[in-house]
Length: 116
View 1 (cartoon, rainbow, N blue to C red):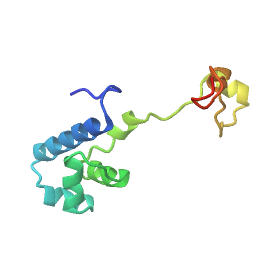
View 2 (view 1 turned 180 degrees about the horizontal axis):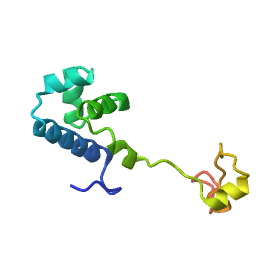
View 3 (view 1 turned 90 degrees about the horizontal axis):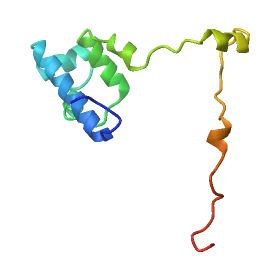
View 4 (view 1 turned 180 degrees about the vertical axis):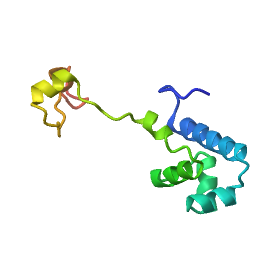
């Protein structure tokens, strides 16, 4: 399955769990051995492979133990300022985001349903 925005969070977690399980088997590791190498409990690894919620730090430990931590670079690429952005900010890094007029404009003012 290719993961896309059309999938539910649950479906994505399940697919990630299946992929990690296949990777573990490809490396010929049991859940107990991988959990020990990753420094997490076996039930935590079982939960992740079953597609249930887990801490990001646990996922990082598993990726590190499988020696595939570099996949995180493609997950969230490092943000680089464009030349125009650097020129506008004078080389300083932005610390805040600002909403564009389109984002702040509401189509209708909020009202109770009984008000017409």
